[in-house]
Length: 90
Image (tube, rainbow, N blue to C red; front, side):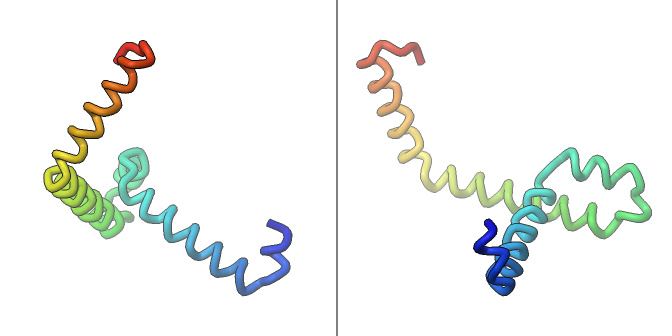
């Protein structure tokens, strides 16, 4: 971390990437949305953005799982077989 701090440009880019990821994590965090809803008039736009983003993520995950359900089921079966082979209860 100290080496990154020495190179200010790299440090700022890394900091920006991390802050963007944190922002998107907040958008899906129900506790964060509940905190915003304590003052709905002040946070109306942010609440709307969070809910829209959360709905978008939910739809994407649902589509992804639906499109890959056979892979998910096959993986689950394989894990179950491996657990059975090594005597771990599923």
